[in-house]
Length: 111
Length: 111
DNA sequence: TAAACTGGTCTGTAGCGCAAACTCCTCACA
DNA sequence: TGTGAGGAGTTTGCGCTACAGACCAGTTTA
Image 1 (tube, rainbow over the protein chains, first blue to last red):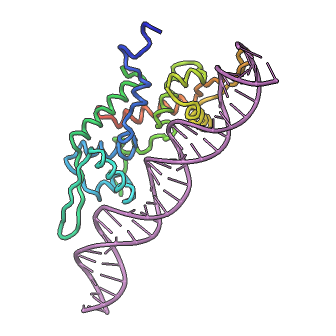
Image 2 (image 1 turned 180 degrees about the vertical axis):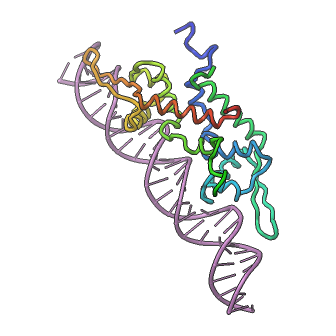
Image 3 (image 1 turned 120 degrees about the horizontal axis):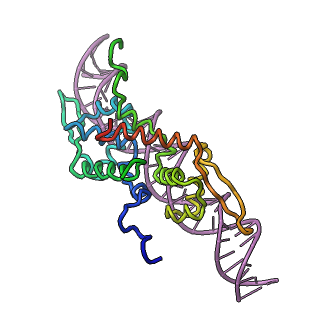
């Protein structure tokens, strides 16, 4: 093996798939990020019903995205009741963009 | 609910994401299916190196795909050595097609 | 015959996704 | 002024899963 078997020119679709960001790859988080990418900010309650998730599930996924630096959390009060809002970060947008790009590379009619 | 709030025209991208087939969604299996979709048949040894997987990992993913009816396994002998070959089934092709379709629906420039 | 290799399956474990239980707070009511 | 109901999230517990290493069957080489 000397001439052309390492990944020289064409990015391997297989590698694109295997290199997918697992934080983004989880459907719930992908939906969450996509939603946040389209809106400035979204509240916990809204996301809960929009995604049809249990509170616990949403909370843990959000925490994971926050740990990854993909979203920001803002805690405020509305009329004495706590309200938690989420916003996508630049890193989050970049990760989401990279994710879709990788998928496009691996898709049937991809490149 | 009487007029127009259930999913009338535009299929919700969020639902498309949340409804993804988890069997296909796993990157390793997605890569595996994609590879098999492009080739008639592939052998264990080839897949192992093509995907860069451990034997155990490949074996278990293949078993899962077989359980789902997405691939077929053929065991033969080549010069007295056992050879295991995999082939995608019609159901596998359908699942893969449906998966990409769902993703396209949810992608940024999707519909 | 023993040793090493090929081809693959089985077992053990860390991590993850999910929902139920729990906490903290506010508001209605007696 | 207690007391209970309910909103807003977080923490805990559990079952499943992806992954790798140990293991096994058979073959070839020394």
